[in-house]
Image (tube, rainbow, N blue to C red; front, side, top):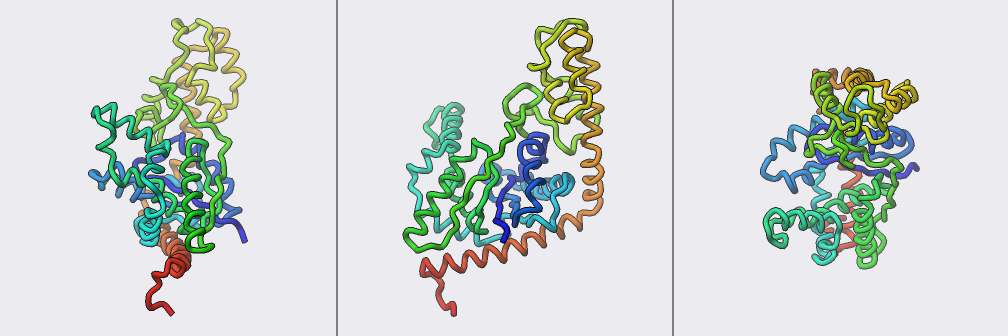
Length: 336
């Protein structure tokens, strides 16, 4: 039997190039080789968007369209909505008894959030919600509800996977062998930089090119991208290794990379011309994605069918796992 792989996306905005090169390429490579569950994590998105549910609701479908447009195959991948699997919520409650608050506060993600709140509000984290602090517990339920064996992650997410493994070990030690302890499937792809040179491309950072962006939007963003600050005039030599335009030329595998590099170093390539070439290449790269996105935007019933079918299949698996859990926790009242 193929191993079960689980991954999830928070529907807080459309997907961008950081998602595509940082994670989605891995998903596309492995979708034919594993029993793949892909969660649209709307409940987790609400942990810091609880006051804007419309944003989350709209982006459930937008993210799904992005996934289908880049080539995620619903015949190979169970695409499902987190909130429609009540077994995840039930597992989250059970797991919450197994994790101390001290352990949660040691989680690097939680520590970072508390530090940010303290800087903003001058307190020690009183504005951090229960839902956010418990995020790692919820994520453990997301994985184990489907007997997830492998979880594709970057190095920054390893602490979350380790916390899930701790929960599984503690649960099994108390209630008997019930849950599968997941392993990280570590990505070798480095985090994709933003147009501003930031080490992370992010939805909220204003430095991302989204897969759905049209040519006018991409042109505006690329024309503002960071280049070598020492290049003042068109014919000044420059260092392409610190230029975000060259970085994106490499990312989308432009055919004349060597020429771009040599011309840049010799001062034979102006930044404006280089950016215009990148805009053209970027549109060519995104063209097949845009064509598929247009189809799914015109056929929302197809998107809904994918989500309904994927959720139905995922629910069956979660019910199977939950049946074992309820039996071993001795809460399977009146079950035959």
